[in-house]
Image 1 (cartoon, rainbow, N blue to C red):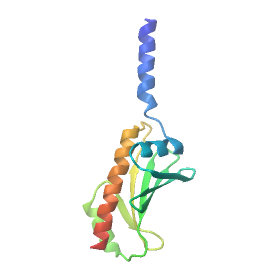
Image 2 (cartoon, rainbow, N blue to C red; image 1 turned 120 degrees about the vertical axis):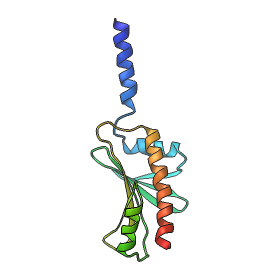
Image 3 (cartoon, helix red, strand yellow; image 1 turned 45 degrees about the horizontal axis):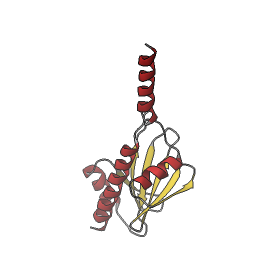
Image 4 (spheres, helix red, strand yellow; image 1 turned 180 degrees about the vertical axis):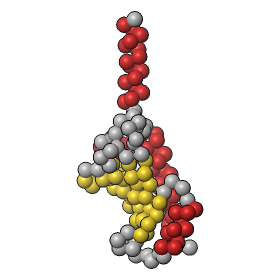
Length: 140
């Protein structure tokens, strides 16, 4: 009986150990494990990731959620075009920031259940792909 309880406890630990909110250092490691070489902590809860000369941010929010962020500066984009992106796309949202620069964001919700490193890596890969499509869309 004691072995069964230990086996169950070990299983619960293994299952739940991958479902917690991550530290900044752990997120850096997760992204580097996925091949991103330029990942740094800017300040608590904010990571900067450089990919092919472009800069992205990953915010670790207090509730465990992650938010990916990408901005393009020096280009004018009408709100109507941003709205077209939002109507036609899933998994991200676009808006004009206070400087009227186009921004793309996406969220990975923690919801108390957490997520694995593979989920974080897939989330960020999809965001990088989405940002490349966003750049193409903006420049059309």
